[in-house]
Image 1: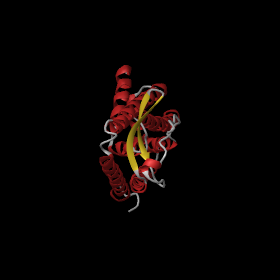
Image 2: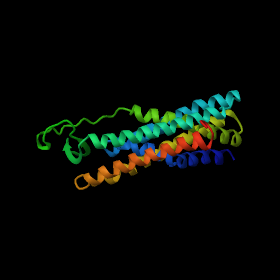
Image 3: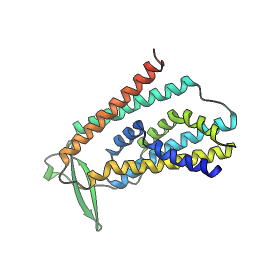
Image 4: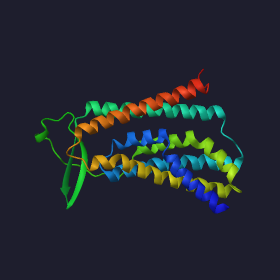
Length: 237
């Protein structure tokens, strides 16, 4: 029984990663990635932030029997809507203000793919093509994951309390749920980036269209979440 519950936690975590607002957020974040590895790292960072928040909220509930007030849960969900609008606006803004093109270049015997901006530079042929390969954690992805974790913690904790026999098992359940969401987000971020990586030289125009679609889609979803929580659920009206 215990193994079944824990396996369920992992599988639900993977599925949880593919919810619409999560897909929109990670797709928006992935437009900032310079490589497939960078995109996957962003997805995993989102998952880590999401799991960290769930673990903190879950620990408080499991060991103190306190529950998250319904109004606070609605406020957090509404803030997620605002955050999605902000992410979408950022994608569209960058698409409009940065002259982006794709190219492959090689150094140290390794070929790398880049979405490269020439904003505020001279002619394309005169601009430098030197790129750093950052391995740092994306604080933006971490903060978005933390916010999503706070907003989604109420439903998860209710399910956990109904499914587990002890607080320690509940924490293990949340940890496996989080591992599943990290894995799911890494896959999702890679899926968003992979077609671009393999069409670096031919699809610069299509990429701009894809960025616009991701940006506008994220804005639309964010506005819908705000309307649903603020009006339908009665947070504001």
